[in-house]
Length: 129
Image (cartoon, rainbow, N blue to C red; front, side):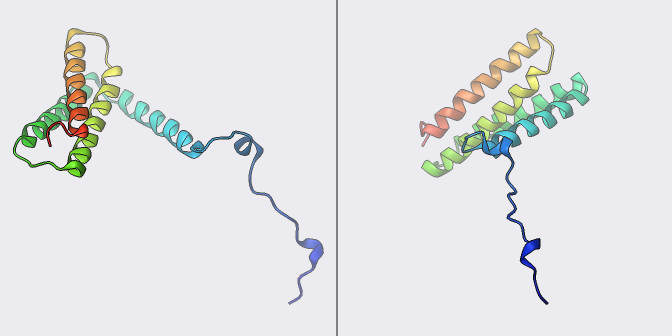
């Protein structure tokens, strides 16, 4: 089989819009935006009661983990892992709370979430190791 050189073209698969922006984490930014849009649509599709129940379940799980930490011997790696998980839970709860209308219940849940976030940071920094 003979390959004719006149049919081989130098092909550039990169687009200008992507290469003109200089950033290390460009794909990561696109992915974060896409995922946040999907999460917003999923949360807005749920009723207010379902969102409050979801917040309550996540708060309950986080408090359960905080209670169980007193029985564990934490080293640096495990405390950072547990702290990251609890902090991620707190951030998820906060996202859900942003979709709820203003009320005293929302303020109370935000205060609990803030407390969980503070405790997560303490755990990550090794206060309980």
